[in-house]
Amino acid sequence: MDIKKKIQHGKTYLGIEFGSTRIKAVLIDDTFAPIASGSHDWENRYENGIWTYSLDDIIGGLQDCYARLSADVKSKFGIVPETYGAMGISGMMHGYMAFDKDDNLLVPFRTWRNTMTDRAAAELSELFKFNIPQRWSIAHLYQAILNKEEHVPKIAHINTLAGYIHYRLTGDRSVGVGEASGIFPIDKGQYNKEYIEKLTPVLKEKGFDRDITEMLPAVLTAGQADAFLTYEGARLLDPTGTLKPGVKLCPPEGDAGTGMVATNSVLPETGNVSAGTSIFAMLVLEKPMSGYYPEIDVVTTPDGSPVAMVHCNNCCSELDAWVNMFGEFAALSGNPMDKSALYETLYKNALNGAPDCGGTVAYNFLSGEPVAGAENGRPMYFRTPDGSFNLANFFRAQLYSSMAALKLGMDILFENEKVSVKKITGHGGLFKVEGVAQQFLADGLNSAVSVMKTAGEGGAWGMAVLAAYAAFGNGKTLPEFLETDVFASMESTTVSPDKEGSAGFAKFIENYKNGLSAEYAAAK
Image (cartoon, rainbow, N blue to C red; front, side, top):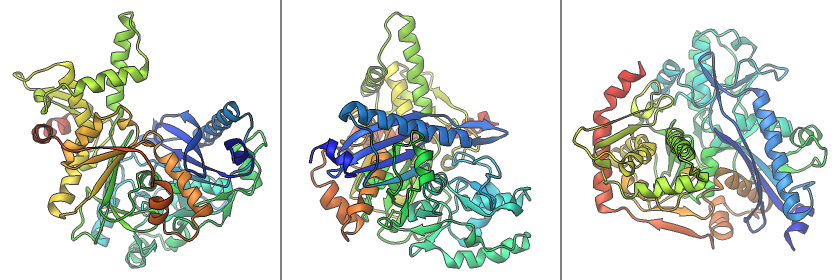
């Protein structure tokens, strides 16, 4: 069957992911190859001390992204999609959306980027003896209770961004287990009952005596799909009226879960690094960790296996700002450069830098970075007076900086917990320039790193694969489906750590740690 007929007969699968700077839609066919895409660029706002996106941003961005996908399909195949075999929604994980009984948003959406729940996160972590990061939904809810915020008595439901969009499209308040693991800790595929029992009397003491489980979305595992696109949902997504209701929707997942799927990293001893606006690593665990650490989250794969997650708030934004500045210079000089060529030139030249960046150190903290102990963000760099300061070393330091905080957290897993990993796969925008960030990450983690051909498609492609799994998984487990159906012939490249590169990265990290006190001071 040709692709046009697949589109007409609903043999295609749509994934839409709400990233921090872009909403992206990827359409695949039953061979899992991307056949069309669309995207919408957006930026979070910093309003009244809160990192947020408005509901108009969210819905308008969704509609524009979908319209661009439809236009791409029409330009390639001469038709506009009326239906799909299945679809799914993904979003940046965690954060806080609180609604009243009439589904009115009570306070502006509080994204993962906010570091305003330190007391709640600390108290919950101590209560559970389990790390609760500041960005988790339960930390936001508990902090609002501690603050006696006016909206708390009116809350009927809380949700994540992906869960909210899924609800608007289907009327179903469910999320995938991986997404749920950023709302409240998970045990055996559901919210941890022991922790809920510990939390209930504590909340009651604070004047909050409602059943918290009634406020949280239901939890489903990958492949479970009993939600369908409603008439209202179809009109919301496609105001032209072309899209028909009735499309199956798989459980919504977080960007961490779609990253694991996109890199075939759902089995124990596999891991992946997702690098865009933020950077995070996921290592699927063979056994539970012996301790808990504020730098390490424990979440799950989309099929419920435990995962150690190191999440850093900052990755490419500061790097992109420097690339843009050099683009400005190129234009001023009368030699404007295409954006892709600009990235290629600056990144590839960084390979010529000294392994330790010649004494140059950079910090990419646009927002707080809990893994590195930074409460607020202040991008900065310093260099030793006797160091070698040139363009290659400077950009190499900026690239190292994009993954330096991640290394601090990963070292805890490798050194304290003796976690082993057989395979690390990178994906996301940082890896688009072939062989540069991939090599630096291999050197920094002292582990081979693979990048797949689909790395640039990222989580939206992973979400489309989860939709396909819900449609025709045929009783296979998610790892079986990925191994035998999706990745059996997938192209990838693998690089091994370079001895000099690893030693240089270690020296950079030593300088990076030594300079953190200056970063903390600048943030004040």
